[in-house]
Image (cartoon, rainbow, N blue to C red; front, side, top):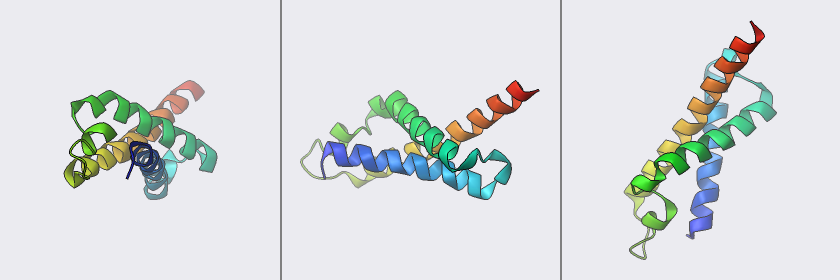
Length: 98
């Protein structure tokens, strides 16, 4: 696996996180396109913010092999980024409508 592939999979995991929240809680859905955009940007934002703690793609492949614990943490943080991104985006849009 390369650094780029790990980053791309991480972005898709964030996208999946936003769609998962929209599937579970219908009131947080912003439509397919909205969920996709917020999931991508939310996942990237959280990974870039907290990735410096040691679960970025460079750290995952630092030993020459895949560190699956760090890879799992990376995917979990990306998933949470998508979920939190959609949650906060929906709250902001609801407040702006009032």
